[in-house]
Amino acid sequence: MPHHHRPPRQDTRRPVTRRLLAGATAARTGDEMSGPALLLLGYAQTGSASTAAALLAGITAAAALGGPVLGALLDRTRRPGRLLAGSLVLYAAGLTVVLLSLGRIPFSFTLLVALAAGTLAPAFAGGWTSQLSTAVPAERLHRAHALDAMTFSAASLLGPALAGLLARLVGAPAAVAAAAALILLAVPATRGLPRRPTAREPVTVRAVAGDLARGFGCLFDSRPLARATLTSTLSCLGQGLFVACVPLLGARVLGAPGDGALLLACAALAALGAGAVLARRRRPPVPDTVLWVAPLVLAAAFATAASCRAGLLVAAALLAGAAEGPQLTALFAVRHREAPERLRAQVFTTGASVKITAFALGAAVAGPLAARSLQGALLAAAAVQLLAAAAHAVAGGVAVRTARPAARRSWRGSVRG
Image 1 (tube, rainbow, N blue to C red):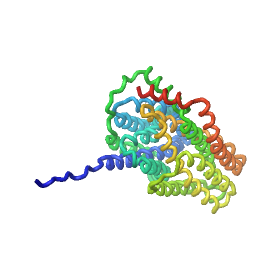
Image 2: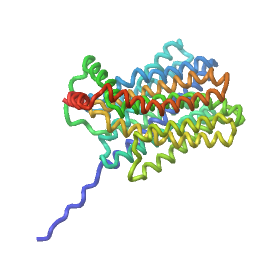
Image 3: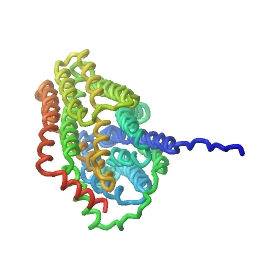
Image 4: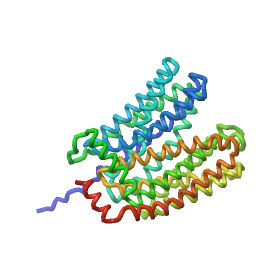
């Protein structure tokens, strides 16, 4: 009898991965658009710089509150795709309400809506990334991490540029509406996330509170995860210091405040290039090593920017981007490796919330500091990066003394049970 050979089974997760990455790019681009668009909307509608700044601060700072809770819910639900889709829809709805209400009703209500929408912002970062392991085979997870990090770089390049272009050509309201539309465009991609096969306990306040306690404990229980969290948070603080100096660098060195955005574009392009190189490598670099080397490179870049010379500024921006891309990929790899599956989404969203808050704090500190001394602010950003590299070793030593291997094994066993 002739033997009938079955055709090889195709990996159906590849199209799903592409949809997820495409959705992540759209959602993150809309998120990156929303901040500058709200800033421009606030100033255009009210003529007040303080009102514009309050809107931006509200939608950014609120992420620190929403990230841990959103992560705990993502870990507990059987349908993370549905919860993620709901978060995107509500965020877009919040932007729409801010757009329609600003200048028409008391500003306090509009600000509350911006704060509420901001609590969902970690869905764009950790919410997406935490679900990659459910849709990507283990042998291709490193490449998926690199591609996912590239979506952040692409969004940071496209988002502000689109917001500025639309605001200039059509008006600030159109920029906010386009940000909301891009976020909604990402909703269908969440259908690619598989359901969890096992039933979860009912979602109650007590259960979520317990998950929150275990999630925060997980960040410090694992030595590599503790180091990655502390190092990336301090590094993000330094990046916030640098980004706040960009308008002044544009005005004093490049000719106009808006030209400073070119430096961020250079950094984003370099990050994209570094991510593309990492995605093609068969043997990725050790992520723990990348996490302490990247702040050293960023320190060199920010110190170079303190020269305030146009050519060196461009070189510094490219160097910074070349470090930021691999740094983000390495951070994703450590979180996936160290976080228990039950708490993975919470670890990602909590980490994203902490980084967003650190970035906002750095930007807030840099404002008055750069007004006194621009070079001093840039050197302070470089010093914070050196501190981040030093903290990588210190945090490792602390974690060794506070979490013995036996204790870690027993704790993780109780989480899975």
